[in-house]
Length: 146
Image (cartoon, rainbow, N blue to C red; front, side, top):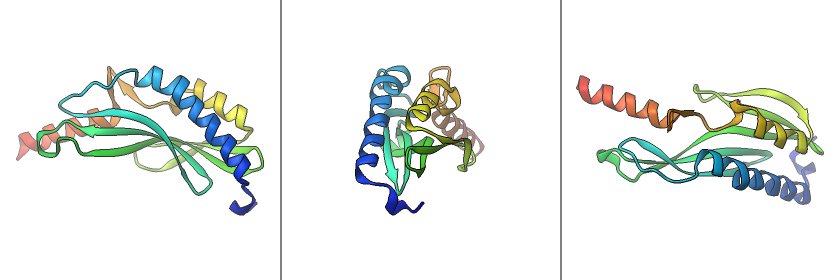
């Protein structure tokens, strides 16, 4: 099916279901409060459409002195519309590539899977998120090596 077959009413229903997941599950569980750090730290979890693909994104702010306050997005999961009420679920790898883990799920199945499978959640490591820790380590290494 072509993207022109993705009707506005269906897109609105998908947006509402995804926003409900963000507001009622992802934010309370993975971002109950914003905790500024000396590294990059998450300040929001949101969703954005890119054509027929709905991306789940963790929004970050920098705590590094040299770029204090700069912000960037780190996607972690994606819902791809493939046909009427059928979606593929993609996981965002650390390499920047998307990897399809589930194919042809209904919207309800996709939302349940996004909620229940940890690979589709924002990555956390002892209170820090993956991009925050990784960027912090890389900057620390570069600062000490230079």
